[in-house]
Image 1 (cartoon, rainbow, N blue to C red):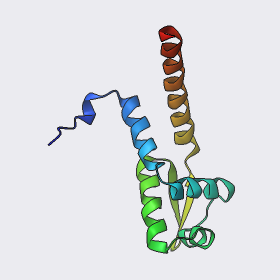
Image 2: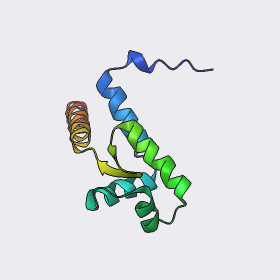
Image 3: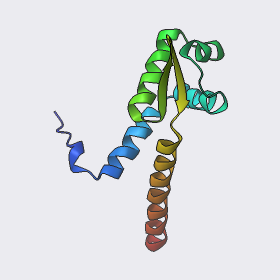
Length: 110
């Protein structure tokens, strides 16, 4: 059995991995796109747009919430979902730095 020691890796690497895992399903990417275009949508409104059942959409929303890519606010009994733009911008900056470092290594190795 493998011994996973995520805590021994750099926090930026852990964060990129967490977000990458959250985005590893096309439904989650579609949900991000929907929320970017329709801030404050409820789970039910997302269900109306996607060919998925409500429990499935709820699961994907939880994964996105756990990664920090979306937020939820309550309005009475309704849960309103939004893209967490600060977190999203942080992730894209971290990923860009990773890609730049990899391109530099590729140039040196070539």
